[in-house]
Amino acid sequence: MYTNNKLYFLLYFLILFSQEKVNSQIVIGTPNLGFSQACASSNFNTYSTTFVFSPENELNASNQFSIELSDAFGDFSNGNIIYTSNAGTVINSPATLNFSLPNTTAGESYRIRIKSSAPAATSSPSATFAAYYKIQDAPFTINNLVSTGVYCAGGSYLLTIDNPGTGNNDSPLNYPELIFKWYKETSSTTSVFVSDGPSLTVNQEGTYFVETNYGTCTSNSFSNRVTISSVSSGEADAGISSSLGNIFCPDQGPTTLSTIGGNSYQWFKDGIIIPEAVNQMFETIESGTYTVQVNLGSCSASGAIVLQSQIFEGSINVDETNIIEAGDSLTIVVSNTANTPEFEWYLEDILISSATEDNFEATAFGNYKVVITETSGCIASRTFLFEIVEAFDPFPEVEKIPNLISPNGDAINDTWIIPVKYVTGTNTKVMILNNRGIVVLETNDYLNNFPENNLNLTSINQVFYYIITTPENEVLKGSITIIK
Image 1 (cartoon, rainbow, N blue to C red):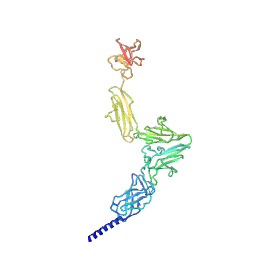
Image 2: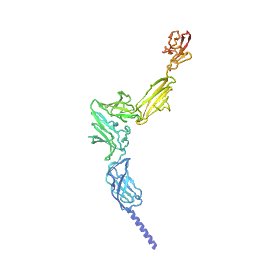
Image 3: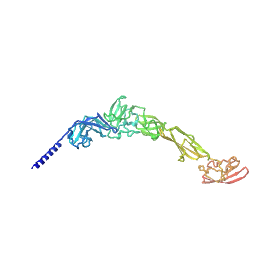
Image 4: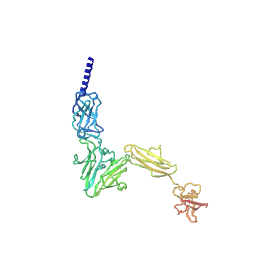
């Protein structure tokens, strides 16, 4: 009996102890913020809060503290847990927790509160604070980076955020969750809000720009300024911008020229129309003065820009076609202003590996090219083409008098070439007759040039006859068949 009473007492004590643990509670104080506003980005997104709780000894070993974030208006109806501690790691009061903001955060009246899991408790909400995650925090372009815009009186002009725009523009339109605010300058340092949205229709003159709406958080997500003007008649000024600048390196690819928005466009280079250039933007890699005519409807605008491609200057000391005798050579020298240039020489598109200087001694006939490459600064190349051909010998040494020629313009057997002992300077008489016996050539100064014209060669093969009489009265006769 004594033993049973002892067991009952022990059981009662365990039940009472468990009931006390079940009914244990803690109180969590209002969290204090370690910041006045949270302007997060990919470069910084760590914030802290400090809170007290009591009593410390009421925490279970499995307890976890969490941070709950309200919506942008301070409402916790759909609160978001943004941090949870590991079980049993926070046991002393006061406690400090670090957390990060979701990348969808955007508003002026967020709050946080602290929750515990064992025992369950919730603090009062913190003070409100502005919080934004700046998913895009870089300058961007509008109006294709053209600094002006023109509309006809009584009309309007549409300003839009470029997407993607030119160059390395990080368009905020790539982030659908962002919203924008347009402003009009009232002085060099002040402006007034005009409208929300990714575009703005302007019907008042002034200078406009747009910013990504990050509220009271300062941001680099803003556009270039565009000055809009109105024209009643005549021709207005259409601005032109170059994506790579007025002076650019061609190795970066073509620069994109952009002008103001209009109904239609026509581009010109050095005063000459570019027939295919009829859009708002035009790409080029060439230096020159570019102009554009923009049709605005009831009025028009024109603009001009001077481009300079920073490719180095270069020249070569030979002509496109050069003639040398067999066994002779030709020295080619290239002059250039390139920084640390490299040279590549080619014959019939095959690299001459031994030729790496700015000069070359050519002995072979054929098609050559030399490529000069600037290897520092504005990386670019220039290519010069030339050919070397064998000098034409109108009086080559031949052993026999030919009886077949083909005057087809291929420079092979085009004329009747006879041994040099019968040509000009030997006082040999050369006479050529057609198949009807009519003399078509008679000379004591033959230049290896028959026929000099087509002689109305209408048949496939036509036969002529020759009589050669030397000063010693030696006579040679024969026929000449001409194949067309």
